[in-house]
Length: 89
Image (cartoon, rainbow, N blue to C red; front, side, top):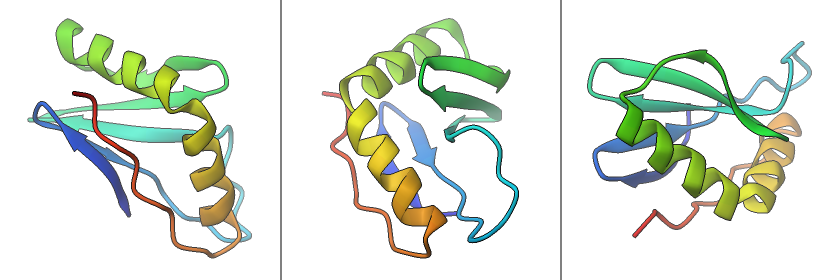
């Protein structure tokens, strides 16, 4: 699964399923042993969990980079390589 960004110990990844039945556009956020699946439009937690502070970081980052995330989703679903996205600073 390609890594799109990394900040404050959080890793953001997105699956590629070319021609697969992937559901809503989303990404996966990893922090230590926790994993969350976050939808892109709207930006919201779909599954999993993160500590409160890290969840807020992820949601803020996703709101700032929503357009880029959607572009990367579309790239991955057509077999292209996603582009890196700037971390939250």
